Length: 277
Ligand code: LER
Ligand code: MN
Image (cartoon, rainbow, N blue to C red):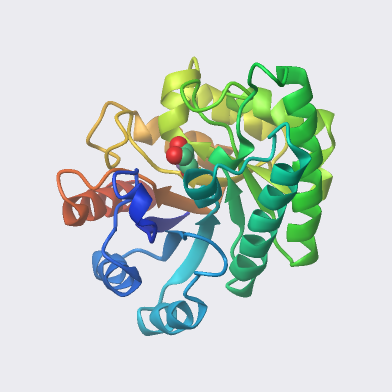
């Protein structure tokens, strides 16, 4: 498995669970210095994505791009794929489609996390889930036409009332045949710590449902600090991921605590201890 660390380029998300907040150049340099294979970026939009600068920074620092977040569409513009208003939904699709295209230039997938939205008084959950399935199908096809998968992330109950557990998300993808559209699960261990009965057992069950269901992992401890700074059993989780055939990124989407540098070094320590044993 490979290591990745988050860089946030959105001032409105300065308090969000991302490690580096001091610009692309500084983030890439610190990621490389700490020994990461890749960076995961949270950009304001496709228009404001620093494509040229990123190409040269990745090359200079021998880094890859692991994935690109789309949550700024929600954070900055309140766009969501399950908005009852079709005009807003179309804008959400457009916002994400453009990020899919830019990420694909770097051979990276886009992430659907907070852009999934939630059911409200106006929209019943079943209708919202129908809208979500439709949007994931459209966006998954778009990602596939650019040679990429699309990462769908189940979030904890305080962030959405749509799908909270990974098994519900997996069954949803299967029910709507969304794996055929290239949609894969993003397992964020912070959300899983809140929602799953047993994280390693859940990963094992996902592996038995389909070997390529898990597309990406947010490598966070129980308190959303770097792995090792909470009470997550990272060894059991790593073994379950390995046994499930997962061989992609462990990406630190965590708070920069006690500092960004320490979150980075603690993360790389946690990954090296597992991958070299
Ligand atoms: C995004 O990856 C995520 O985990 C959500 O909690 C958005 O904040
Ligand atoms: Mn996440």
